[in-house]
Image 1: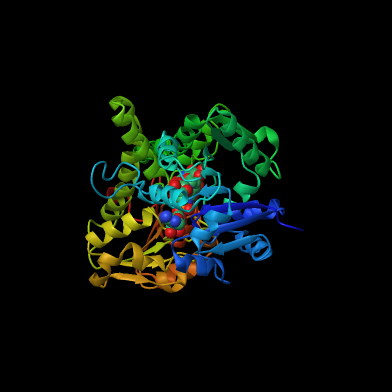
Image 2 (image 1 turned 90 degrees about the vertical axis):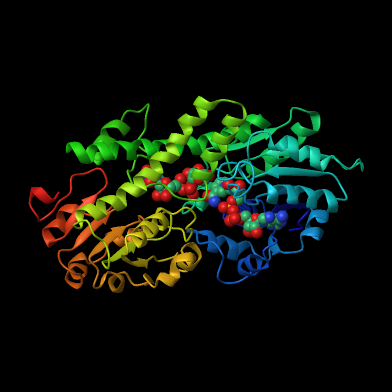
Amino acid sequence: MELKKKILCIGAGYVGGPTMAVIAKHCPEYQVTIVDINNERIAAWNSEELPVYEPGLEEIVRQQRGKNLFFSNDIETAIKDNDIIFVSVNTPTKAYGEGKGMAADLQYWEKTARQILNHAESSKIVIEKSTLPVKTALAMERILHSQNNGISFDVLSNPEFMAEGSAIDDLEKPDRVLIGCQETETGCQARDILVDIYAHWVPREKILTANIWSSELSKLVANAFLAQRISSVNAISALCEKTEADIAEVSRAVGLDSRIGSKFLNASVGFGGSCFKKDILNLVYLCRAYDLNEVADYWEGVVRINDYQKKRFVLNMLTSMFNTLAGKRIALFGFAFKADTGDTRESPAIDVARHLLGEMAEVVITDPQALDNVHLELGDLLDTGRIHPISDPYEAAKGCHALAIMTEWGLYKQLDYEKIFHSMVHPSFIFDGRNILDHNRLYEMGFNVYSIGKMPMTHFGTELL
Ligand code: NAD
Ligand code: UDX
């Protein structure tokens, strides 16, 4: 088939790669190119070992790569050649200057806008795929229209709702696709082109169109609401631990109310990932900028509870292990921020490891996909000599005083804990930060079992609880 239509995506990360692979799969008449300033990342996308681990991704990339899916570092040529440009660059929390630690860092975003402006020789549709503060499209348009050179640009907002670990499923069968545009003639035409692309595989009724500001804001709000559910259930988990209520029973009873719903009510050591914290802080910063301090305080509480939950987890370890962790060997099962991804950005395991190292513990870390990131995330503490990455979970557990489940990997439910128990120092402790293990069985084996939002099961008698 002759490829007549062309799509470009700037930013070959966790979002750009999977999203464009799925578009290429469903739109054979389009040629899809993905560019990035990171040459290593592009080389990896062109190799057998993709830079992003996602179930189902490799298969699609293998099928489409070289056919209608291309990875390149020639950004200039790509901008010249393509008239539909998705921008999926990173928008992390600002680490400097005004708004440090809260606002979105838009430097990569703005650089991309200027690259497009400098290299465009024809009119373009520019699509915001990255998560951005509301009103960013206005800034984008101002930059793009700053040289009166007769080239027109239409900016659309098309935020991405996929979650890591289930990216391909989420992209194949999205709950909705959201497209925001300016209500101008060319804005609506651009919107219709994007609607047609998604309509190749997404039912029309799931493709929502909106004004561009609603679209930008909806993304921040969706993440804030999702994270708020986890912080709500985690806050109640602390109360359960004091009252002999069981968080799993409470979640079930509450979630069966159809107005509330059962998803995203799993109590945990805390949420991680590159999005939730960053996007809530972004929302909080925006609210403060509009002088809406009460609204800002409300959402900031979601992040505060998450930090509290991680600290509380380590504090529970400390008090239950006789108030000292110094010299004790503790294995963290899981380093990724959730199962089925190698991504460790904002992973609760990082904070837990830092707190444990602060208590002078020896920290063993194991993970089936994310072990390489230990050096990246804990690099400043490597010279303590107390961080031990070990890929085999059985080896990791050997000689340890305690295990802590940090990531809900299916693998950890299937391990032979009897064998693990016998290789550990006794009394042996398990802290299940994801509530995924069979606690009764572990207790019967001889473990002292601590979980989130449930009463501990110990062999010590009540005075040590
Ligand atoms: P990422 O860091 O994995 O990828 C971003 C890529 O953009 C990097 O490879 C970087 O090198 C590249 N880049 C930066 N500046 C560039 C430039 N000027 N030209 C070319 N390439 C450039 O980030 P990500 O996780 O894919 O997230 C991208 C955006 O999508 C963010 O705004 C994020 O909030 C949003 N988002 C992420 C997720 C997720 O689960 N990760 C989900 C939905 C939305
Ligand atoms: C999130 C949003 O879900 C997604 O829609 C958006 O596009 C990007 O941000 P992601 O961060 O990839 O996706 O993963 P998600 O499944 O939301 O999990 C985030 C964190 O919450 C993980 O650490 C996960 O383990 C934790 N979590 C999730 C819980 O602790 N309990 C739950 O019930 C659900």
